[in-house]
Image 1 (cartoon, rainbow, N blue to C red):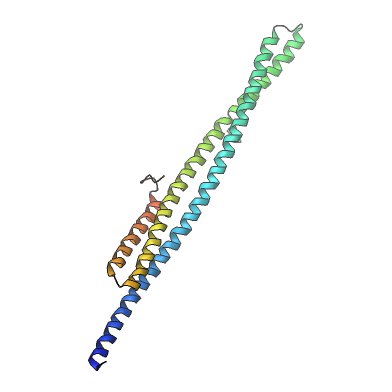
Image 2 (image 1 turned 90 degrees about the horizontal axis):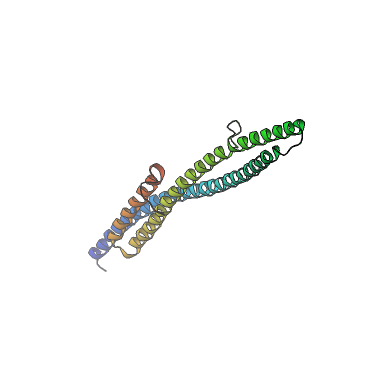
Length: 196
């Protein structure tokens, strides 16, 4: 090998080494973005599951209150039918007092703002938990797509080092930008795109 060829070979190796450093830096930045989107995705997934459980529990409590209210109302209605058949005024008065108590209890089962445990309040809380669940799920889908874009971008950037095809690095950078966009959408406007 002549001195001239050795010099050209060294320049080419130095150029390739510089390109490889840039690609390695690109991979590092994309990996950082991947770690961020994965962390946000796991948090959103956990929030979605938690809010789904909360909504289910509230709807079960709502159903229990509704059943109790129906039983108490039915009992009060039956008491009203029996009221006319009562033999004396004292018995009628006692039954009427009991009917009033049952109706009061049924009303409390329907609405109990001070505790938030009337069926109306429970339904409102359950709907709110469902909205929060849906928001977290929408965020999760965005972060998952972002993670996929970052992972593919890392693979393509790595392939650039092996093949020397710079077009792969450009595609990798484009996918990284798509991943960043999906992450930002998940953070600020998760319902903009309907992904599920």
